Image (cartoon, rainbow, N blue to C red):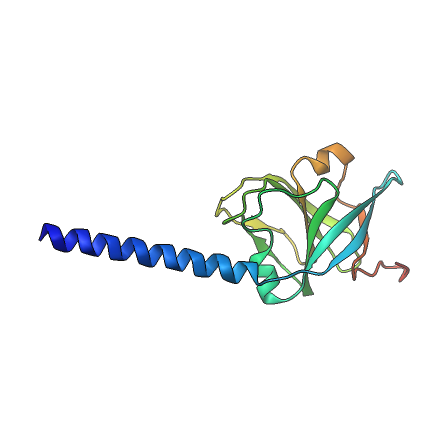
Length: 163
């Protein structure tokens, strides 16, 4: 019986290892286009970011998982293509993040700061939105970003129609 358990254990570990390699390989095959995004605060300050666009289901599922670093002026913009309540999580995400939930016109409606890496706790938009902007944790506090601030560019069309 002991030999059976040793063989079974090795087989199970091998299968788990191969599954992990396949999952990482699939993640590596998802690519993202980059665009510039502007954030204008209610105080009139403008901040620019280079964002990767997560617009299709595979990109949105991948997000920033497995990344170990991100430049301070970079982020990821999730475009859900419709206004709806959004649920996010940090599974397999090593970077602590700030999440900005925004309406179709780019208005920031809700902010979740310092999302905990690797957590499976659901982070709720609290209301219907179209976009989620993920930035390095601490960016919201450092730049004084608040609900009501506005995003533009990267496919977001402000209420006045001018990008």
